[in-house]
Length: 145
Image 1 (cartoon, rainbow, N blue to C red):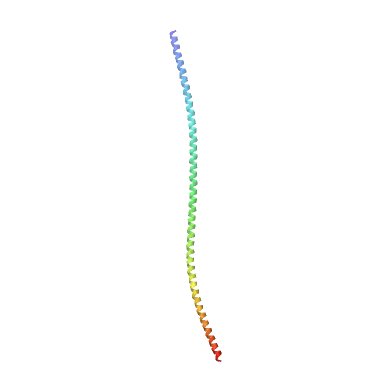
Image 2 (tube, rainbow, N blue to C red):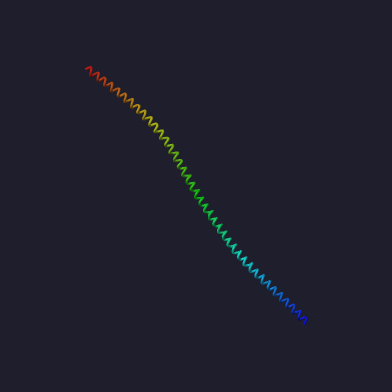
């Protein structure tokens, strides 16, 4: 009987130990489930953050591409304006040269006109003097008769 009591005591200790182990295992399982839930939540948060980072990077890349396109267009416009300015500058130089040539021609024409006018005046004075002389001769001839 004593052996039976010892066996029952050992069995009861074993039951108590098993129950304690079961409680520890249950607590550990609950802790593991909690950890798993936290890990899954963290994973979801990290995935969302990763998606947000990818969206931001894509947005910055698109902005950089747009900026590059705008810079390219701006460079093209500047080149066009530089070409136009060069054409207008050449036209202005040609116009200045033409203006200078016309000014020289006009100056020469004015000098020629002055000389011609002076020559005409001299000729007119000469003709008038001739007419006065002719008049004096006629008058003198008429008085002599």
